[in-house]
Amino acid sequence: MEHLRKTLSENMAAENWSKLNNNCLNDIIQKKNREKEIINFGYFWSSFVMQIIVYGLLCHTLIKHVDDRPLIIICISCMLMYLPLTIVLLNVFKRIAILKNQDVNGMDLPIGSYVVEKYRLLKKFYVFRRWYEPVLLTISTGIMVWVITRLYFQGGIYDHPVLALSIFIPSIIACGIISIKNTDKYFRQPLIKLEELIADLKS
Image (cartoon, rainbow, N blue to C red; front, side, top):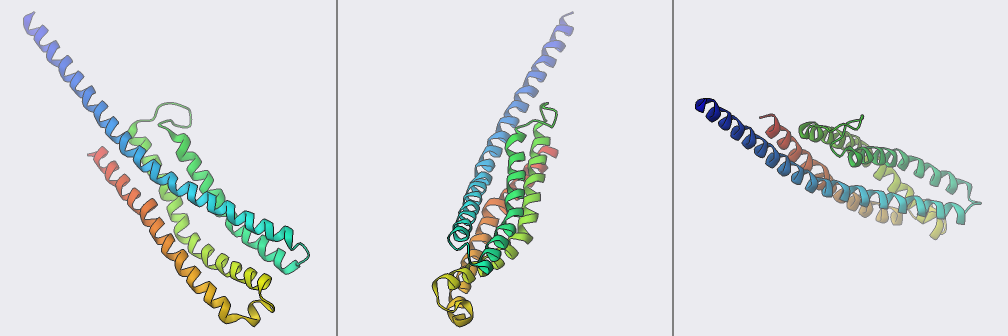
C-alpha cells in the first residue's frame, strides 16, 4: 500500500511538472508571437495608410480635372492596379488578426497549429508582395510622374523628358530601398523566426 501511494505521488508530481513545463513553453511562445504580431501589423498600418493616401490623391485629381479624359483614364488605371494589393493585404491580415488560437469552428487550436497557420498566411502575402509590388511601384511611379508633368508643366512629359526622368529615377530608387528594408524587417526576418519556432515545437 505504501509503495502504491509513493508511485501515485511520483506520477502526480511528474504530471504537474509536465503541465508546468507546457504552460511555461506556451507562455514563451505566445510572448514571442505577440512581438512578431506587433512587427507584422506595423507593416499593415503603414502600408494601408499609404494606399489610402494614394487613393485619396487620385480621387482628388479626378474630381478637380474631370474634363481631362486621358488623365481620368490614367488615374482610374492606377487605382485599379493598387486594388489587388489592398484586397490581399486586408484579407490576409484580417485572418491573422482573428486567428487568435482558434480554428474555423471556434475551437481552441494547439499553439503549434496556431504558429504554423500564422506562418502560412504571412508567407502567402510575402510571396504575392514579392512579385507584385516591384511591378506596381514601377508603373505607379511612372504614372505619378506623368500626372505631375501633365498638370504643372506646359506640354507635359513629351516636352519635358529630362525633368520627368529627374523625378522618376530618384523616386523609383527611394521606393526600391524602402521596399527592400520593409521586406527584410516585416517579412524575411519574422518568417525566419517563425520557421525556427516551428522547428523548436517539432523537436
